[in-house]
Image 1 (tube, helix red, strand yellow):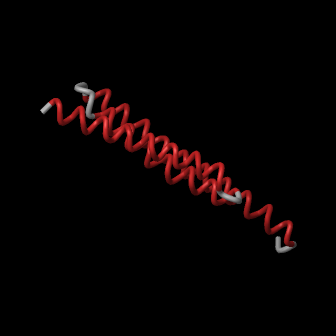
Image 2 (cartoon, rainbow, N blue to C red; image 1 turned 90 degrees about the horizontal axis):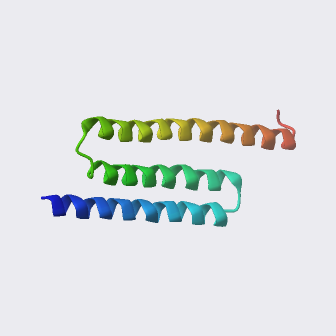
Image 3 (cartoon, rainbow, N blue to C red; image 1 turned 90 degrees about the vertical axis):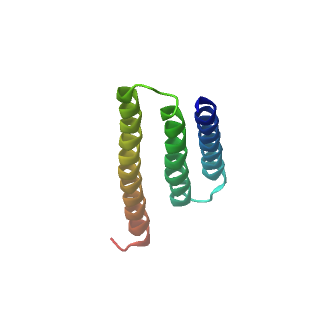
Length: 101
């Protein structure tokens, strides 16, 4: 049973690393700020979730598992809030440039 959990943990962490790499490529390759922000928000949240889940399978202490889950939840909330505020600021700047505000 421990071998299966170890393999599942390795698989999830490698999958998370793949998504981190994909978000970095998206950050470098996408043309505008909103596309870059979308790539970072989606892929990084999924990547962090995979890495945290892989780390959870290695823990025996429920307190540590709860802390890992809390780290992921706070990161999801802060990423969504930061992304919304950044997109709102970019939209205002774009509309002001176009003369619509």
